[in-house]
Figure: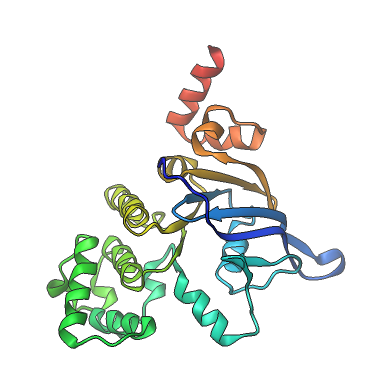
Length: 272
């Protein structure tokens, strides 16, 4: 967690809603949520399966349009019908996902993935400058470019692939990174490393990171602000330490009970 002073709002919305279906069969997956995500802030959206956090993530990525409300990026509404505007949005708002293998073409070698990143970013660089950028990106995530540049995704481990996704973000340098359950499919050692790299990305690039997870323990470890989500709504919003120390809803307390160390801390303080 950080003491960075946050003031500039990067992403925001008021009464954002997404309804799937119609009539009696309709489902309000996201139901009137409001938020303001600041530059350099690490936010965690925490909820169980079916809470609406994945639908919210899809709207933040511009992959699903809201039924009501709108998402503002740097104060301007997202324009779903404008290809150029959406391309610019996706340059500035990137994502890493739960399954890194599904995010890469399995027939492309690592070096092509990186070359495609540079093409997406634009600008004119020599092959030597590109190579140096690839080496720096891999070094950032503790990988050696020379050892992986000719490998295909299926030749790498899950931890290596997730780090490769972060290296890709490092190359593109977006203003916002959405991390959707990025540690759920890797071992504990790799999980800790990924969290440290996300924090490092924020600290070095003043990047806003939106961490989406069902694990309140991980969210507390990395976040400045927690958004606790249930049934498409935010049950609680506030600084991570305040919500863990003084949970205001039964749902939040239940999530805390699923994390042994947090449960112990909360029970001790309640007894005092």
